[in-house]
Image (tube, rainbow, N blue to C red; front, side, top):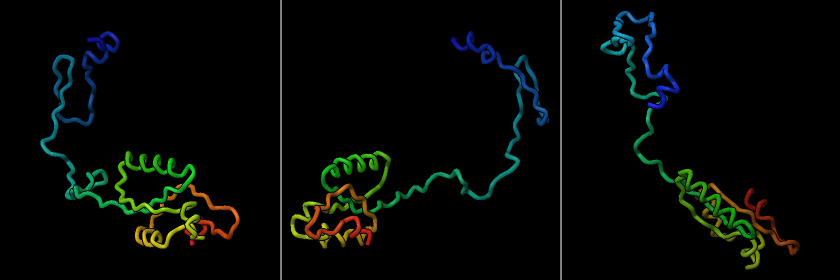
Length: 146
């Protein structure tokens, strides 16, 4: 094999002394160690730090998503794609905020029905939005923080 010429120490097993082993026999160039019939230490508990995850699937997390406007929708598409590929289990409730809502005459930039989603999910993933200049419009960022 190729590794025999490149790595000769791998092709010929070399005996290694084991001072802790009580039973060791040597035949040719290979050292054979006999293993105890059962482990010396056993753990009664079946749970351990490396135990497998529970088989019951985790529930999805409900989140409110606002795509925003301007470059917001493109950024939100990329963000949601990354979350999906990372295995995030999400129930997405989309709301409309920003310039379109301001232009409909709502000075807060968010519809009253959107507040219900925010209160229910308590998680808000928001893309960049535009707050119109002048005219008494409230900043949506400040409004949602309150």
